[in-house]
View 1 (cartoon, rainbow, N blue to C red):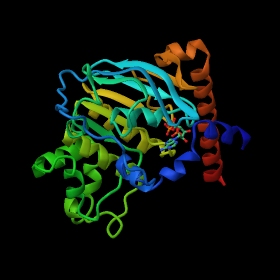
View 2: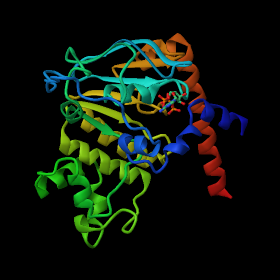
View 3: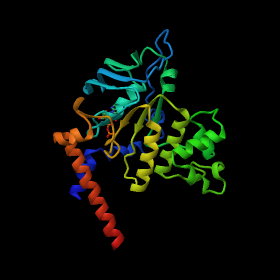
View 4: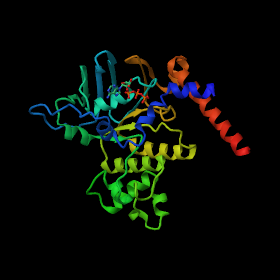
Length: 306
Ligand code: ATP
């Protein structure tokens, strides 16, 4: 058990409990009672996305002045590429996505999209350009079709179904007697975490934003579901600038660059293989997670055999 609990703590599994049942980042703010305090600058212009390059330039940020979270974070996600952010629990990974979405303003440095400071553009245009796939998606008490169409209200039925197909949830929907007209949510059919995440992916496919933020599922999904979601995510991120907030490490292997955030700065950066070869923080996290996964697998097999 020691073997299991150490890496789990390290990756912040306990923290996640407060995020359970929380739909998306906006709802999370409501629940935490924090009105996002940013407003459009006078004369703010709509963001003009040309290629979708994301830049963090020496970003400094704290929620509480006593405790700096980011102390000069710099990285670049070239247009169409994927950068994954990993690091210990509480390192500020999700904070990076909140700053990109401008739920908060940085206290130093700049967050840029195609060279435009996110503080200088309208929030509406900024958020229209970014698709978020949260860890846990809130469903409306309505049909599954309505829930997917939420990504883009004017999508035709055929587009909704195509998005569901790409997100690998279409087969599941068609198995139900009422298909796309099945009621879901609290009073309807309850979907599993993996199914809800695929609904979120389908929404994002409909929205087709140039920039994607994937807040990776943390809970251990079974490996088949994880593989399915992985496939769906790969499809949706193809050709889009993608920032992966990785709480587990399984999805980061193919990222163009992995950033390890620790103590407010980028402690290591590189590809999966380069970071393993380096034998530092990332390699340690990777090995601990692999041990934890193996232990879980063994446990499962012994339970099945019992
Ligand atoms: P995890 O992997 O556990 O989700 P993380 O790296 O994503 O962690 P963040 O959610 O970015 O971490 O949080 C960074 C730090 O900031 C944490 O110590 C957290 O407690 C703190 N924090 C997050 N949100 C707030 C807030 N709204 N007010 C004050 N502190 C916050």
